[in-house]
Image 1: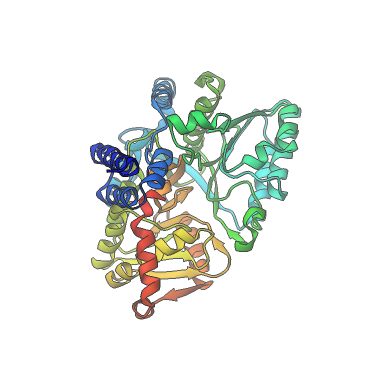
Image 2 (image 1 turned 90 degrees about the vertical axis):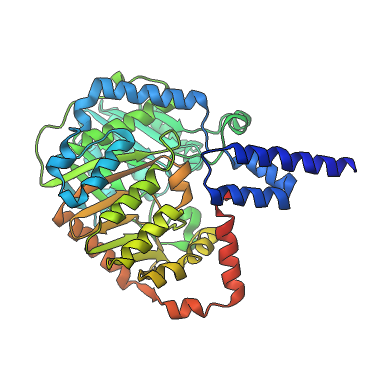
Length: 477
């Protein structure tokens, strides 16, 4: 036997054993890696070494545990009453609220107000106005922060605030905002007194490769102003024209502006990221409770990431879907669900729930586009309705249910959001807010083309093979 053949065999055996020893992999993911490593062992083993393990390392996990222990010991009253789900939430939806609370300890709080932003321009104008009115502090975290009109306007508002004595803290993801972090604008912010930090930086790529993986990212979009106002939704600090991928523009996003006690929960989630990125302790973050009641919205923050327990996000979606009694409408730009979510959607449709799914017709990821469409036939045969948005790249992540429950934030229905990214969402109960979001979803549908089972069945064989092939190796992509 040649040396190359022996090396080939050793690589296949070593990585196959590693894959088979992992209890955290799903059978489809294990099978996908097994296929790749056996077909292309050298490339496959390299890919597995770089991307196979969902692990930030022991040090990061230990720090995460320390951070949330600190939060629970010093700010437990801001996280909500553990019995609040049963006292505040409609009994039909208590399981969803209770599961959301189990992820990182944020329970539903009453007395919030939520305002749906009309578009990107309104979001930018209101956000800048809120920063300009800040008296104590401004905290922002963005996955993608561009030095375009919106990104520059936010940066300049932070600099104005810092110059008048407001404490400003800004976090940007090391990959998504890499051009911003290297820009003169970022340096100007620091010079003006804005405290800056980079989440999951690329300052030591070799160390990251050896101890973790490069594509674990902080995908959150958080803004907290004076502990009294917070924004939550899908919009990064970037224009809808989205210069880095302009050919898919406009990017259609959704944002809610919240006031009330839920702001303190988003403050704590930001604090956890600031502590992780800087090494500072909770004492530096203002944690004055928001006691005033602003409205009728009952809401709770949901944060997830690779240092939380595995499977939390898909399980949350599955439980929310299982709670539906009449209708469920969902929009997401990236739809590559695991079996937990896929079967929950199909089961809901089978039991008579009006399930409507809205995806972009043109996706900025050809991999996601192909994988998403591999699920269309199964969903349509179960009775789900699918619409493909034609007015740009629909980037809004929205879920509305039964006219009363909504989920909004940064999480997509894909394996990256499920396993790799730090995400932030708000789960809320309120008829008026849900109606506003439902109207927005109807607007998306009006700009969409329906997808019918009859046309999916007629797709040529090579298209079906391609879609299914991409979906099969999806867990390794």
